[in-house]
Image 1 (cartoon, rainbow, N blue to C red):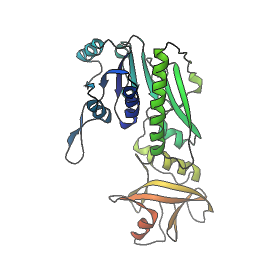
Image 2: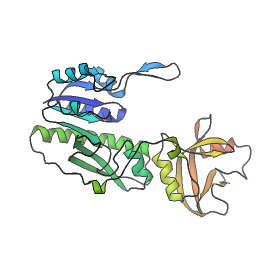
Image 3: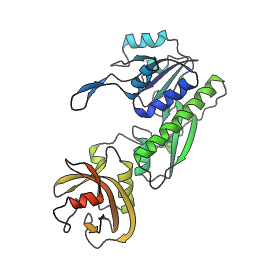
Image 4: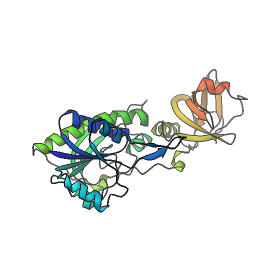
Length: 307
């Protein structure tokens, strides 16, 4: 079976790797154009491109997915299957090219958490489980018929970073299983019920600000759902403080919401009546550090409040 793989970030690399390792013919990889990054603004390859180059797989990097030359090139591979993992939205003139269709790997249990940030929103919303879904593409994003789903527990200590890595590996195995089923013509699909759909839109800065008047559980879930990137934030004496790790406690507040209490080498903040322990944080212009080091840098330890 002749496969073209489309993807960009590190999340997609295990899926490409497992296909290559299992002997599937990946004729080409499609990824984003190189971008300038870092202080020196050097051109950087995507993670998928780096892997493809190491495997000597041809790489395509169109500026537009509707470029006639790009579409002509795709057709020249005579692909049986397109596999899309963490890439852009494909127009119909692209995803209808392969003879056996095009499927996408999505990091949620569709139809729940359709959209750009399913991993973050599953944690932010306090879900106890999530997973991955492979589905055939159709015009409306994340709505195609489901091929396979695999579930995974969201642990109480999980953050978006650790869950991302687990789903990346779970997704790779699910991609392999899906391709094997398609190759064997032993596949049934499941229609997505739009009535059960929930959204996972792109995360913007305003989504990351902590509202200390909300409960400790909601605040804790926001912090871990945005850690390590883009990170939940608050302000302290007018400067931004990012919070990467917190923990629920049984302690009740005695001060206003957002008020900071320091006990020994620990930091607590009041979130709607309950004290939330702040374990790891980063002051504006400073490095990410643990609470004891943050305390050492404070000019005072009383009368402080997160806003």
